[in-house]
Length: 515
Ligand SMILES: Cc1cc2nc3c(=O)[nH]c(=O)nc-3n(C[C@H](O)[C@H](O)[C@H](O)COP(=O)(O)OP(=O)(O)OC[C@H]3O[C@@H](n4cnc5c(N)ncnc54)[C@H](O)[C@@H]3O)c2cc1C
Image 1: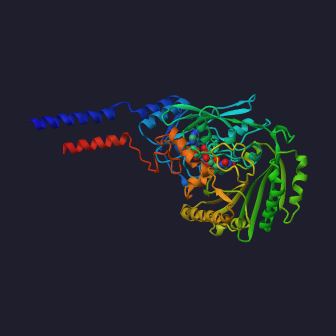
Image 2: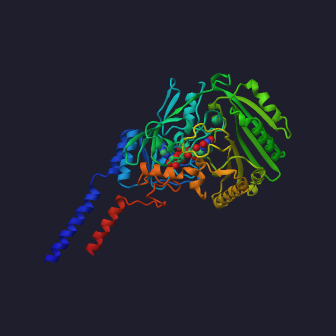
């Protein structure tokens, strides 16, 4: 009698706990309905807008989230973070979706900034304040026709925040005006628990330092940032125009052409920050291609004096065209459609210089032997480009970002294409070893397969960044495989217990009790 009473009593307690957990107003449903009531979106795989919202720039690393939350207000982001972190449900922050590692997405819940689009220019202070969902195209359109430029990317669909947090160079202007991260005056940051802080040189300077180059997806969710804009008046052209040159060599000895260019850099460009280059080298057996985008942020009347001596050297360019472009024109000319149809793997080697041995490796990058795979190497000339040495970006001393890329369509080629490009990078690093020319890798070209990524991305800043992460995100709520762990966490173990697992455990106990 006593036994069955105890049995009945304990069963009642279990059932009450079980029903309490299941019937109380579900905080996730409340979050979803709040977001929708404020004009936001909640997208599941069955929704017609889901596929377009979840598609990443790079098909090779596509993952499909269970749920995409698109808050329409900053307060809704705060509510989302406090709700999700208190339920111990992990999330990823999605911006322009251009991360080469796909770290803005995962199979769980994604917080997508796509509807946070506020953009304000203050002409008096020459600053622009941008919400987390703004992409560069939207900024260039607003600045078009003015004399101002901003340190955004050449690709117009990249997100402004993701770009800036990783450093953010503009291949045409950064030598003149610095990286995007050098130009940020203030961040508004949502922390994992839904509280909000400002980071600037005066307020929370440690977080301000870390956000400028420490990389997207760490420390907190940047809701908004204020960045300097720059008046282009040295060119004496209207509407912020500057001279843009497209200089191309086809099927010549491009090793000689590249060496001529390197000599020009040493003798002229290294001392003239008005000159910038983004160079593309593609070699395939007998045929080869060398194309240079070059900008000159000075008066066009000086072009002949600055460039002619170099361009008259043999081999002469196959063609050489000159345009007067605005920043908006450039982003339209160089625009890559989003999302790209191909799969991609793009890597980076931050180099102090380019030696003959490194050139030989670059000129031997020929995976085109299989028709599906194309390869190229970009050389982004960044000598003296960093203006603020006191940021988490670790490479103020480099002159080049050497960025090899491969692109292919057939998913069966994923392992081969990725493996051959990683091997190419290793060969380049080996060739640079005797001269210590390569000192790391660029975080904005984040590479899930990079060994020693901690020192490659962060160099001597790794320990300080971990300290700052420990202070601002002690439970490592914002985590991803190449994220910065706080000091109390070592592994990338991802699973956190959540409410669903509690329901499963209590159901299991009840079943055991009955049978
Ligand atoms: C075609 C192409 C061209 C590029 N050109 C350049 C270039 O010229 N210069 C350059 O420096 N880089 C360039 N990049 C690299 C690009 O800057 C990085 O991939 C950048 O991280 C992309 O940001 P996103 O918001 O578009 O991408 P996402 O994939 O959405 O985000 C990137 C990372 O930032 C995090 N993140 C996004 N929003 C926030 C936020 N609000 N708060 C906190 N974390 C956030 C994400 O979680 C993710 O980890 C280019 C990339 C591509 C694909």
